Amino acid sequence: MGSSKRIYLFTLPAIFVIGCFFVYPILLSARLSFTDFSGVGLAEWVGWKNYDRFFSRTRYLYSVWITIKFTLVVVIAQTMIGLVFATLLHRMPAVRNLCRAVLFTPAMMSCVIVGYVWQFIYSPYSGGLNALLGMIGLEEWQRGWIGDPSTALYALAVAHVWMFAGYTTAIFLVGYANIPRDIEEAGRLDGASSWQRFRHLELPLLAPSFTVNIILSTIGTLKTFELPFIMTRGGPDRATQTLSLEIINQLFGNYKFGFASALSIIMLIIVIAVAVLQNTWLRGREDNQ
Amino acid sequence: MTQMPRKALRFLAQGVVVAATFAMLAPVVYMVAMSFRTSEEITQAPLALPETLYLGNYANALSQMNYLQSVLNSLGITLSVTVIVSLVGSMAAYPLARRTNTFTRIIILLAALGLATPNFVTITPIYVIFRNLGLLDTYVGIIIAFSALNLPLAVFFYTSFISAIPKELEEAARLDNCGDWAVFWHVIRPLLGPATATLSLFVMLMVWNDFTYPLLLLTDPEKFTVMISVYRFVGNLNVKPEMLFPAAVLGSLPLLVLFIIFQRRIVAGVTAGAVK
Image (cartoon, rainbow over all chains, first blue to last red; front, side, top):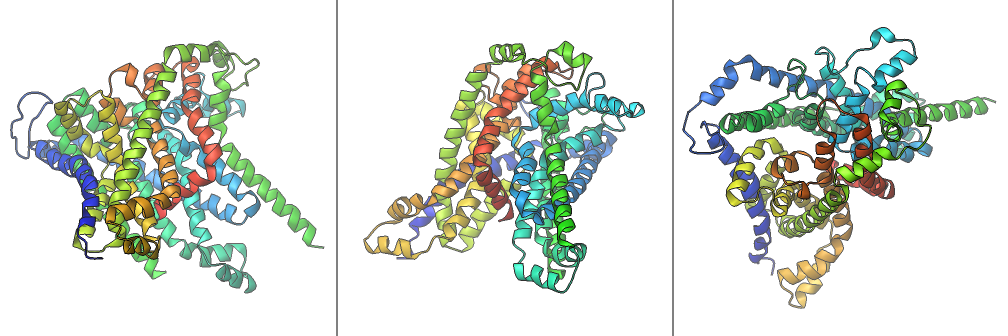
Protein backbone atom coordinates (compact mmCIF):
# COMPACT_ATOMS: atom_id res chain seq x y z
CA MET A 1 0.00 0.00 0.00
CA GLY A 2 2.65 2.47 1.07
CA SER A 3 5.07 1.30 -1.60
CA SER A 4 3.01 2.65 -4.51
CA LYS A 5 5.41 4.40 -6.86
CA ARG A 6 2.63 6.03 -8.83
CA ILE A 7 2.33 8.75 -6.20
CA TYR A 8 5.50 10.31 -7.67
CA LEU A 9 3.61 11.00 -10.92
CA PHE A 10 1.96 13.85 -8.97
CA THR A 11 5.22 15.79 -9.14
CA LEU A 12 5.47 15.60 -12.95
CA PRO A 13 3.67 18.89 -13.75
CA ALA A 14 5.80 20.77 -11.21
CA ILE A 15 9.00 19.16 -12.51
CA PHE A 16 7.97 20.17 -16.02
CA VAL A 17 7.37 23.82 -15.02
CA ILE A 18 10.51 24.13 -12.88
CA GLY A 19 12.55 22.38 -15.57
CA CYS A 20 11.26 24.61 -18.37
CA PHE A 21 11.34 27.92 -16.54
CA PHE A 22 14.24 27.69 -14.08
CA VAL A 23 16.63 24.88 -14.93
CA TYR A 24 16.58 25.18 -18.72
CA PRO A 25 16.75 29.02 -18.74
CA ILE A 26 19.72 29.02 -16.35
CA LEU A 27 21.53 26.51 -18.58
CA LEU A 28 20.58 28.52 -21.69
CA SER A 29 21.76 31.70 -19.98
CA ALA A 30 25.07 30.06 -19.10
CA ARG A 31 25.50 29.03 -22.74
CA LEU A 32 24.47 32.43 -24.14
CA SER A 33 26.97 34.11 -21.81
CA PHE A 34 29.79 32.63 -23.93
CA THR A 35 28.37 34.03 -27.18
CA ASP A 36 27.88 37.43 -28.80
CA PHE A 37 24.14 36.77 -29.36
CA SER A 38 22.31 40.01 -30.15
CA GLY A 39 18.73 38.76 -29.96
CA VAL A 40 18.43 37.96 -33.66
CA GLY A 41 20.48 35.93 -36.11
CA LEU A 42 23.23 33.53 -35.24
CA ALA A 43 25.20 33.52 -32.03
CA GLU A 44 28.98 33.20 -32.33
CA TRP A 45 30.99 31.50 -29.61
CA VAL A 46 33.31 34.07 -28.01
CA GLY A 47 34.64 32.13 -25.01
CA TRP A 48 35.29 34.14 -21.86
CA LYS A 49 35.14 37.50 -23.66
CA ASN A 50 31.94 38.67 -21.90
CA TYR A 51 33.37 37.82 -18.51
CA ASP A 52 36.69 39.52 -19.39
CA ARG A 53 34.72 42.60 -20.33
CA PHE A 54 32.93 42.56 -16.95
CA PHE A 55 36.16 42.28 -14.94
CA SER A 56 38.22 44.71 -17.01
CA ARG A 57 35.81 47.67 -17.09
CA THR A 58 35.32 49.61 -13.90
CA ARG A 59 31.76 50.60 -14.87
CA TYR A 60 30.43 47.07 -14.37
CA LEU A 61 32.37 46.46 -11.16
CA TYR A 62 31.06 49.84 -10.05
CA SER A 63 27.44 48.73 -10.54
CA VAL A 64 28.18 45.69 -8.39
CA TRP A 65 29.59 48.04 -5.75
CA ILE A 66 26.49 50.27 -5.99
CA THR A 67 24.27 47.22 -5.55
CA ILE A 68 26.22 46.04 -2.50
CA LYS A 69 26.29 49.52 -0.93
CA PHE A 70 22.56 49.93 -1.44
CA THR A 71 21.91 46.48 0.03
CA LEU A 72 24.07 47.17 3.10
CA VAL A 73 22.37 50.50 3.85
CA VAL A 74 18.87 49.09 3.35
CA VAL A 75 19.38 45.85 5.29
CA ILE A 76 20.98 47.58 8.29
CA ALA A 77 18.43 50.41 8.46
CA GLN A 78 15.45 48.14 7.86
CA THR A 79 16.52 45.57 10.48
CA MET A 80 17.13 48.27 13.11
CA ILE A 81 13.84 50.08 12.46
CA GLY A 82 11.90 46.81 12.38
CA LEU A 83 13.52 45.71 15.65
CA VAL A 84 12.72 49.01 17.40
CA PHE A 85 9.07 48.97 16.30
CA ALA A 86 8.62 45.27 17.15
CA THR A 87 10.21 45.71 20.60
CA LEU A 88 7.95 48.64 21.40
CA LEU A 89 4.83 46.95 20.03
CA HIS A 90 5.61 43.70 21.87
CA ARG A 91 5.23 45.70 25.10
CA MET A 92 1.99 47.35 23.93
CA PRO A 93 -0.58 44.63 23.24
CA ALA A 94 -3.42 47.17 23.15
CA VAL A 95 -2.16 48.90 20.01
CA ARG A 96 -0.04 46.09 18.53
CA ASN A 97 -2.34 44.85 15.77
CA LEU A 98 -3.38 48.31 14.64
CA CYS A 99 0.22 49.55 14.40
CA ARG A 100 1.40 46.38 12.67
CA ALA A 101 -1.26 46.81 9.98
CA VAL A 102 -0.43 50.50 9.52
CA LEU A 103 3.30 49.79 9.19
CA PHE A 104 2.60 46.98 6.74
CA THR A 105 0.46 49.11 4.41
CA PRO A 106 3.31 50.42 2.19
CA ALA A 107 4.36 46.83 1.45
CA MET A 108 0.96 46.33 -0.22
CA MET A 109 1.78 48.97 -2.80
CA SER A 110 3.63 48.39 -6.03
CA CYS A 111 7.28 49.47 -6.33
CA VAL A 112 6.19 51.39 -9.42
CA ILE A 113 3.78 53.58 -7.47
CA VAL A 114 6.07 53.91 -4.45
CA GLY A 115 8.84 54.95 -6.86
CA TYR A 116 6.72 57.60 -8.57
CA VAL A 117 5.32 59.05 -5.33
CA TRP A 118 8.78 59.29 -3.71
CA GLN A 119 10.22 60.72 -6.90
CA PHE A 120 7.73 63.54 -6.57
CA ILE A 121 8.36 63.95 -2.83
CA TYR A 122 12.08 64.40 -3.66
CA SER A 123 11.54 66.69 -6.64
CA PRO A 124 13.45 70.00 -6.38
CA TYR A 125 10.59 72.39 -7.23
CA SER A 126 7.18 71.52 -5.89
CA GLY A 127 8.21 68.32 -4.09
CA GLY A 128 6.93 67.61 -0.59
CA LEU A 129 10.29 67.16 1.16
CA ASN A 130 11.77 70.52 0.16
CA ALA A 131 8.48 72.25 0.98
CA LEU A 132 8.51 70.59 4.40
CA LEU A 133 12.13 71.67 5.03
CA GLY A 134 11.22 75.24 4.00
CA MET A 135 8.27 75.22 6.38
CA ILE A 136 10.38 74.28 9.41
CA GLY A 137 13.14 76.73 8.52
CA LEU A 138 15.76 74.36 7.10
CA GLU A 139 16.02 76.01 3.67
CA GLU A 140 19.76 75.31 3.45
CA TRP A 141 19.00 71.56 3.43
CA GLN A 142 16.81 71.82 0.32
CA ARG A 143 18.19 70.15 -2.78
CA GLY A 144 17.24 67.93 -5.71
CA TRP A 145 17.52 64.78 -3.64
CA ILE A 146 17.65 62.27 -6.48
CA GLY A 147 19.35 64.65 -8.92
CA ASP A 148 22.39 64.97 -6.66
CA PRO A 149 24.86 62.05 -7.02
CA SER A 150 25.84 62.30 -3.34
CA THR A 151 22.30 61.77 -2.02
CA ALA A 152 20.53 59.83 -4.79
CA LEU A 153 21.36 56.32 -3.57
CA TYR A 154 20.41 57.14 0.03
CA ALA A 155 17.17 58.75 -1.15
CA LEU A 156 16.31 55.48 -2.94
CA ALA A 157 17.27 53.55 0.20
CA VAL A 158 14.84 55.63 2.30
CA ALA A 159 11.98 54.85 -0.09
CA HIS A 160 12.92 51.15 -0.05
CA VAL A 161 13.14 50.99 3.75
CA TRP A 162 9.87 52.89 4.07
CA MET A 163 8.22 50.29 1.91
CA PHE A 164 9.46 47.18 3.71
CA ALA A 165 10.07 48.21 7.35
CA GLY A 166 6.59 46.95 8.29
CA TYR A 167 7.42 43.55 6.83
CA THR A 168 10.54 43.30 9.01
CA THR A 169 8.51 44.43 12.04
CA ALA A 170 5.88 41.75 11.41
CA ILE A 171 8.55 39.00 11.23
CA PHE A 172 10.21 40.22 14.46
CA LEU A 173 6.78 40.21 16.14
CA VAL A 174 6.36 36.54 15.17
CA GLY A 175 9.77 35.97 16.81
CA TYR A 176 8.62 37.75 19.95
CA ALA A 177 5.41 35.70 20.03
CA ASN A 178 7.53 32.53 19.99
CA ILE A 179 9.44 33.48 23.16
CA PRO A 180 8.01 31.31 25.95
CA ARG A 181 6.02 33.40 28.43
CA ASP A 182 7.60 31.87 31.52
CA ILE A 183 11.07 33.02 30.43
CA GLU A 184 9.82 36.61 30.31
CA GLU A 185 7.99 36.14 33.62
CA ALA A 186 11.13 34.79 35.27
CA GLY A 187 13.08 37.79 34.03
CA ARG A 188 10.48 40.13 35.40
CA LEU A 189 10.38 38.36 38.79
CA ASP A 190 14.17 38.63 39.02
CA GLY A 191 13.67 42.38 38.82
CA ALA A 192 15.23 42.83 35.39
CA SER A 193 14.38 46.20 33.84
CA SER A 194 12.71 46.44 30.46
CA TRP A 195 16.09 47.21 28.84
CA GLN A 196 17.86 44.33 30.66
CA ARG A 197 15.16 41.91 29.54
CA PHE A 198 15.56 43.12 25.96
CA ARG A 199 19.35 42.94 25.99
CA HIS A 200 19.87 39.64 27.82
CA LEU A 201 16.69 37.65 27.23
CA GLU A 202 14.88 38.77 24.10
CA LEU A 203 17.74 39.76 21.81
CA PRO A 204 19.45 36.33 21.99
CA LEU A 205 16.10 34.55 21.60
CA LEU A 206 15.30 36.61 18.51
CA ALA A 207 18.30 35.17 16.63
CA PRO A 208 16.14 33.10 14.24
CA SER A 209 14.10 36.21 13.33
CA PHE A 210 17.33 38.06 12.57
CA THR A 211 18.33 35.21 10.26
CA VAL A 212 15.04 35.27 8.35
CA ASN A 213 14.89 39.06 8.16
CA ILE A 214 18.47 39.59 7.07
CA ILE A 215 18.42 36.86 4.41
CA LEU A 216 15.05 37.95 2.99
CA SER A 217 15.89 41.64 2.85
CA THR A 218 19.37 40.98 1.44
CA ILE A 219 18.07 38.83 -1.42
CA GLY A 220 15.18 41.24 -2.06
CA THR A 221 17.45 44.26 -2.14
CA LEU A 222 20.27 42.70 -4.19
CA LYS A 223 17.90 42.23 -7.09
CA THR A 224 16.32 45.67 -6.77
CA PHE A 225 15.26 47.07 -10.11
CA GLU A 226 11.92 48.90 -10.02
CA LEU A 227 12.80 51.79 -7.69
CA PRO A 228 15.98 52.90 -9.52
CA PHE A 229 14.32 52.21 -12.88
CA ILE A 230 11.34 54.44 -12.07
CA MET A 231 13.09 57.10 -9.98
CA THR A 232 16.51 57.69 -11.53
CA ARG A 233 17.17 55.34 -14.48
CA GLY A 234 20.54 54.69 -12.86
CA GLY A 235 21.52 58.35 -12.79
CA PRO A 236 22.71 60.90 -11.92
CA ASP A 237 26.19 60.06 -13.11
CA ARG A 238 25.55 56.30 -12.60
CA ALA A 239 25.14 56.86 -8.87
CA THR A 240 22.17 54.46 -8.74
CA GLN A 241 23.11 52.05 -11.54
CA THR A 242 22.41 48.68 -9.92
CA LEU A 243 23.40 45.37 -11.48
CA SER A 244 19.82 44.46 -12.38
CA LEU A 245 19.33 47.83 -14.09
CA GLU A 246 22.55 47.17 -16.04
CA ILE A 247 21.18 43.78 -17.17
CA ILE A 248 17.96 45.35 -18.50
CA ASN A 249 19.92 48.13 -20.23
CA GLN A 250 22.25 45.67 -21.96
CA LEU A 251 19.28 43.54 -22.95
CA PHE A 252 16.74 46.04 -24.24
CA GLY A 253 18.90 49.13 -24.73
CA ASN A 254 21.91 47.61 -26.46
CA TYR A 255 20.55 44.17 -27.51
CA LYS A 256 23.63 42.53 -26.02
CA PHE A 257 21.91 39.30 -25.04
CA GLY A 258 25.21 37.47 -24.62
CA PHE A 259 26.71 40.04 -22.30
CA ALA A 260 23.41 40.43 -20.38
CA SER A 261 23.46 36.64 -19.87
CA ALA A 262 26.97 36.82 -18.45
CA LEU A 263 25.82 39.56 -16.05
CA SER A 264 22.84 37.38 -15.06
CA ILE A 265 25.10 34.42 -14.28
CA ILE A 266 27.37 36.70 -12.22
CA MET A 267 24.31 37.95 -10.35
CA LEU A 268 23.06 34.41 -9.67
CA ILE A 269 26.50 33.49 -8.29
CA ILE A 270 26.54 36.59 -6.05
CA VAL A 271 23.01 35.95 -4.73
CA ILE A 272 23.64 32.26 -4.01
CA ALA A 273 27.05 32.99 -2.44
CA VAL A 274 25.62 35.72 -0.19
CA ALA A 275 22.63 33.55 0.81
CA VAL A 276 24.85 30.57 1.66
CA LEU A 277 27.39 32.70 3.60
CA GLN A 278 24.68 34.53 5.54
CA ASN A 279 22.84 31.32 6.26
CA THR A 280 25.98 29.62 7.60
CA TRP A 281 26.99 32.64 9.67
CA LEU A 282 23.55 33.48 11.06
CA ARG A 283 22.58 29.88 11.84
CA GLY A 284 25.94 29.44 13.60
CA ARG A 285 25.20 32.58 15.58
CA GLU A 286 21.81 31.15 16.58
CA ASP A 287 23.46 28.02 17.97
CA ASN A 288 26.00 29.97 20.01
CA GLN A 289 23.40 31.91 21.88
CA MET B 1 0.49 56.14 44.65
CA THR B 2 3.03 55.30 42.00
CA GLN B 3 0.37 53.46 40.00
CA MET B 4 -1.25 56.53 38.48
CA PRO B 5 1.83 58.22 36.96
CA ARG B 6 3.04 54.88 35.62
CA LYS B 7 -0.30 54.28 33.93
CA ALA B 8 -0.29 57.79 32.48
CA LEU B 9 3.27 57.32 31.25
CA ARG B 10 2.36 54.05 29.63
CA PHE B 11 -0.61 55.66 27.91
CA LEU B 12 1.60 58.49 26.68
CA ALA B 13 4.21 56.05 25.34
CA GLN B 14 1.53 54.18 23.44
CA GLY B 15 0.27 57.45 21.99
CA VAL B 16 3.78 58.30 20.77
CA VAL B 17 4.24 54.89 19.11
CA VAL B 18 0.82 55.05 17.44
CA ALA B 19 1.64 58.55 16.17
CA ALA B 20 5.02 57.32 14.85
CA THR B 21 3.44 54.45 12.93
CA PHE B 22 0.76 56.70 11.47
CA ALA B 23 3.49 59.15 10.42
CA MET B 24 4.70 56.33 8.14
CA LEU B 25 1.44 56.74 6.24
CA ALA B 26 2.29 60.36 5.37
CA PRO B 27 3.37 59.56 1.78
CA VAL B 28 0.09 57.66 1.22
CA VAL B 29 -1.98 60.55 2.60
CA TYR B 30 0.10 62.94 0.47
CA MET B 31 -0.63 60.81 -2.60
CA VAL B 32 -4.40 60.87 -1.98
CA ALA B 33 -4.49 64.59 -1.05
CA MET B 34 -2.52 65.68 -4.12
CA SER B 35 -4.73 63.65 -6.46
CA PHE B 36 -7.58 66.11 -5.77
CA ARG B 37 -5.58 69.26 -6.58
CA THR B 38 -4.71 70.92 -9.86
CA SER B 39 -1.06 71.18 -10.87
CA GLU B 40 -1.14 74.99 -10.37
CA GLU B 41 -2.32 74.53 -6.79
CA ILE B 42 0.46 72.00 -6.14
CA THR B 43 3.12 74.32 -7.58
CA GLN B 44 1.92 77.27 -5.53
CA ALA B 45 1.49 75.44 -2.21
CA PRO B 46 3.12 72.01 -2.38
CA LEU B 47 1.95 70.81 1.03
CA ALA B 48 -1.53 72.33 1.34
CA LEU B 49 -4.58 70.12 1.66
CA PRO B 50 -7.12 70.18 -1.17
CA GLU B 51 -9.68 72.96 -0.67
CA THR B 52 -12.19 71.44 -3.01
CA LEU B 53 -12.41 67.87 -4.24
CA TYR B 54 -11.29 68.52 -7.82
CA LEU B 55 -12.11 65.39 -9.81
CA GLY B 56 -10.73 66.49 -13.19
CA ASN B 57 -7.48 64.56 -12.65
CA TYR B 58 -9.44 61.34 -12.16
CA ALA B 59 -11.66 61.94 -15.17
CA ASN B 60 -8.54 62.48 -17.26
CA ALA B 61 -6.74 59.41 -15.87
CA LEU B 62 -9.75 57.12 -16.27
CA SER B 63 -10.32 58.14 -19.87
CA GLN B 64 -6.67 57.91 -20.88
CA MET B 65 -5.14 54.96 -19.05
CA ASN B 66 -7.57 52.23 -20.08
CA TYR B 67 -8.10 51.48 -16.40
CA LEU B 68 -11.05 49.10 -16.47
CA GLN B 69 -9.53 46.95 -19.21
CA SER B 70 -6.23 46.69 -17.32
CA VAL B 71 -7.99 45.83 -14.04
CA LEU B 72 -9.83 43.04 -15.87
CA ASN B 73 -6.52 41.87 -17.36
CA SER B 74 -4.83 41.82 -13.95
CA LEU B 75 -7.79 39.98 -12.39
CA GLY B 76 -7.98 37.41 -15.17
CA ILE B 77 -4.25 36.76 -15.07
CA THR B 78 -4.28 36.50 -11.26
CA LEU B 79 -7.19 34.07 -11.28
CA SER B 80 -5.56 31.82 -13.90
CA VAL B 81 -2.20 31.88 -12.11
CA THR B 82 -3.85 31.02 -8.78
CA VAL B 83 -5.70 28.03 -10.27
CA ILE B 84 -2.58 26.67 -12.00
CA VAL B 85 -0.23 27.28 -9.09
CA SER B 86 -2.58 25.83 -6.46
CA LEU B 87 -3.33 22.70 -8.52
CA VAL B 88 0.24 21.96 -9.70
CA GLY B 89 1.73 23.03 -6.35
CA SER B 90 -0.57 20.95 -4.15
CA MET B 91 -0.18 17.89 -6.40
CA ALA B 92 3.60 18.06 -6.13
CA ALA B 93 3.41 18.74 -2.40
CA TYR B 94 1.45 15.56 -1.64
CA PRO B 95 4.27 13.07 -2.28
CA LEU B 96 6.82 15.56 -0.92
CA ALA B 97 4.96 15.75 2.40
CA ARG B 98 4.44 11.97 2.66
CA ARG B 99 7.73 10.47 1.43
CA THR B 100 11.33 11.34 2.23
CA ASN B 101 13.95 9.92 -0.12
CA THR B 102 16.49 11.00 -2.71
CA PHE B 103 13.82 11.72 -5.30
CA THR B 104 11.75 14.03 -3.07
CA ARG B 105 14.92 15.75 -1.82
CA ILE B 106 15.90 16.55 -5.42
CA ILE B 107 12.46 18.05 -6.12
CA ILE B 108 12.68 20.19 -2.97
CA LEU B 109 16.16 21.32 -4.02
CA LEU B 110 14.82 22.26 -7.49
CA ALA B 111 11.97 24.24 -5.91
CA ALA B 112 14.49 26.01 -3.66
CA LEU B 113 16.51 26.85 -6.78
CA GLY B 114 13.39 28.39 -8.30
CA LEU B 115 12.76 30.37 -5.14
CA ALA B 116 16.33 31.71 -4.92
CA THR B 117 16.74 32.62 -8.59
CA PRO B 118 16.21 36.36 -9.16
CA ASN B 119 13.93 36.80 -12.16
CA PHE B 120 16.68 38.82 -13.83
CA VAL B 121 18.78 35.72 -14.20
CA THR B 122 16.08 33.98 -16.22
CA ILE B 123 14.55 36.97 -17.98
CA THR B 124 16.92 36.91 -21.00
CA PRO B 125 16.42 33.20 -21.82
CA ILE B 126 12.66 33.37 -21.05
CA TYR B 127 12.34 36.26 -23.47
CA VAL B 128 14.16 34.26 -26.14
CA ILE B 129 12.13 31.08 -25.44
CA PHE B 130 8.82 32.97 -25.50
CA ARG B 131 9.74 34.68 -28.74
CA ASN B 132 10.59 31.36 -30.38
CA LEU B 133 7.31 29.84 -29.15
CA GLY B 134 5.27 32.89 -30.22
CA LEU B 135 4.22 33.56 -26.60
CA LEU B 136 5.38 37.20 -26.45
CA ASP B 137 2.50 39.62 -26.01
CA THR B 138 -0.07 36.91 -25.26
CA TYR B 139 -2.18 36.27 -22.14
CA VAL B 140 -1.01 32.64 -22.22
CA GLY B 141 2.63 33.72 -22.11
CA ILE B 142 2.27 36.09 -19.17
CA ILE B 143 0.13 33.54 -17.26
CA ILE B 144 2.78 30.85 -17.78
CA ALA B 145 5.56 33.22 -16.68
CA PHE B 146 3.77 34.26 -13.47
CA SER B 147 2.75 30.67 -12.70
CA ALA B 148 6.36 29.53 -12.97
CA LEU B 149 7.47 32.42 -10.76
CA ASN B 150 4.97 31.55 -8.00
CA LEU B 151 5.09 27.75 -8.19
CA PRO B 152 8.16 27.15 -5.96
CA LEU B 153 6.57 29.08 -3.09
CA ALA B 154 3.29 27.18 -3.57
CA VAL B 155 5.16 23.87 -3.35
CA PHE B 156 6.75 24.84 -0.01
CA PHE B 157 3.50 26.28 1.27
CA TYR B 158 1.44 23.17 0.56
CA THR B 159 4.17 20.75 1.67
CA SER B 160 4.24 22.19 5.18
CA PHE B 161 0.44 22.32 5.23
CA ILE B 162 -0.07 18.69 4.08
CA SER B 163 2.57 17.46 6.55
CA ALA B 164 0.28 18.69 9.32
CA ILE B 165 -2.70 16.62 8.05
CA PRO B 166 -2.97 13.35 10.05
CA LYS B 167 -2.30 10.22 8.00
CA GLU B 168 -5.23 8.44 9.68
CA LEU B 169 -7.61 10.50 7.54
CA GLU B 170 -6.14 8.93 4.41
CA GLU B 171 -6.03 5.40 5.75
CA ALA B 172 -9.79 5.08 6.01
CA ALA B 173 -10.10 6.03 2.34
CA ARG B 174 -7.32 3.62 1.38
CA LEU B 175 -9.18 0.75 3.10
CA ASP B 176 -12.10 1.54 0.82
CA ASN B 177 -9.72 0.88 -2.09
CA CYS B 178 -9.21 4.47 -3.10
CA GLY B 179 -6.18 5.11 -5.29
CA ASP B 180 -3.63 7.92 -4.77
CA TRP B 181 -5.58 10.30 -6.96
CA ALA B 182 -8.89 9.68 -5.20
CA VAL B 183 -7.25 10.15 -1.80
CA PHE B 184 -5.62 13.36 -2.94
CA TRP B 185 -8.76 14.71 -4.57
CA HIS B 186 -11.39 13.67 -2.01
CA VAL B 187 -9.42 13.69 1.26
CA ILE B 188 -6.44 16.06 0.97
CA ARG B 189 -7.69 18.66 -1.49
CA PRO B 190 -10.82 19.70 0.52
CA LEU B 191 -8.63 20.34 3.57
CA LEU B 192 -6.37 22.78 1.72
CA GLY B 193 -8.90 25.63 1.63
CA PRO B 194 -7.17 27.92 4.16
CA ALA B 195 -3.75 27.36 2.55
CA THR B 196 -5.20 28.11 -0.88
CA ALA B 197 -6.84 31.30 0.42
CA THR B 198 -3.54 32.57 1.82
CA LEU B 199 -1.68 31.56 -1.33
CA SER B 200 -4.27 33.31 -3.52
CA LEU B 201 -3.84 36.56 -1.61
CA PHE B 202 -0.08 36.24 -2.03
CA VAL B 203 -0.38 35.57 -5.78
CA MET B 204 -2.82 38.48 -6.11
CA LEU B 205 -0.32 40.80 -4.44
CA MET B 206 2.53 39.54 -6.55
CA VAL B 207 0.74 39.61 -9.93
CA TRP B 208 -0.98 42.96 -9.34
CA ASN B 209 2.22 44.72 -8.26
CA ASP B 210 4.81 43.10 -10.53
CA PHE B 211 6.24 45.29 -13.19
CA THR B 212 9.20 43.50 -14.75
CA TYR B 213 7.51 40.58 -16.53
CA PRO B 214 4.61 42.49 -18.13
CA LEU B 215 6.98 45.34 -19.07
CA LEU B 216 9.19 42.97 -21.04
CA LEU B 217 6.64 40.42 -22.25
CA LEU B 218 3.64 42.61 -23.22
CA THR B 219 3.44 45.36 -25.86
CA ASP B 220 -0.26 45.51 -26.79
CA PRO B 221 -2.01 48.18 -24.62
CA GLU B 222 -5.19 46.08 -24.63
CA LYS B 223 -3.33 43.36 -22.70
CA PHE B 224 -1.53 45.60 -20.17
CA THR B 225 -1.78 44.84 -16.48
CA VAL B 226 -2.61 47.68 -14.08
CA MET B 227 0.99 48.57 -13.23
CA ILE B 228 2.01 48.80 -16.89
CA SER B 229 -0.98 51.06 -17.57
CA VAL B 230 0.11 53.29 -14.68
CA TYR B 231 3.67 53.30 -16.00
CA ARG B 232 2.69 54.08 -19.60
CA PHE B 233 0.25 56.76 -18.46
CA VAL B 234 2.54 58.56 -15.98
CA GLY B 235 5.55 58.35 -18.27
CA ASN B 236 9.11 59.56 -18.03
CA LEU B 237 11.41 61.26 -15.53
CA ASN B 238 9.57 64.60 -15.47
CA VAL B 239 6.42 63.46 -13.81
CA LYS B 240 3.31 65.64 -13.97
CA PRO B 241 1.51 65.61 -10.61
CA GLU B 242 -1.97 65.84 -12.12
CA MET B 243 -1.30 62.55 -13.93
CA LEU B 244 0.83 60.79 -11.34
CA PHE B 245 -1.36 61.04 -8.24
CA PRO B 246 -4.74 59.89 -9.60
CA ALA B 247 -3.00 57.02 -11.43
CA ALA B 248 -1.18 56.06 -8.21
CA VAL B 249 -4.44 56.08 -6.23
CA LEU B 250 -6.29 54.08 -8.90
CA GLY B 251 -3.42 51.59 -9.11
CA SER B 252 -3.19 51.08 -5.32
CA LEU B 253 -6.84 51.29 -4.33
CA PRO B 254 -8.04 47.74 -5.12
CA LEU B 255 -5.17 46.13 -3.19
CA LEU B 256 -5.43 48.55 -0.27
CA VAL B 257 -9.14 47.75 0.06
CA LEU B 258 -8.31 44.03 -0.08
CA PHE B 259 -5.64 44.58 2.59
CA ILE B 260 -8.01 46.43 4.91
CA ILE B 261 -10.51 43.55 4.68
CA PHE B 262 -8.05 40.64 4.95
CA GLN B 263 -5.32 42.42 6.92
CA ARG B 264 -4.75 39.70 9.54
CA ARG B 265 -4.78 36.86 7.07
CA ILE B 266 -2.36 38.63 4.69
CA VAL B 267 0.17 39.57 7.39
CA ALA B 268 -0.06 36.10 8.96
CA GLY B 269 0.24 34.38 5.58
CA VAL B 270 3.15 36.44 4.32
CA THR B 271 5.13 36.13 7.56
CA ALA B 272 4.34 32.40 7.91
CA GLY B 273 5.58 31.88 4.35
CA ALA B 274 8.77 33.71 5.32
CA VAL B 275 9.36 32.07 8.69
CA LYS B 276 8.89 28.46 7.54
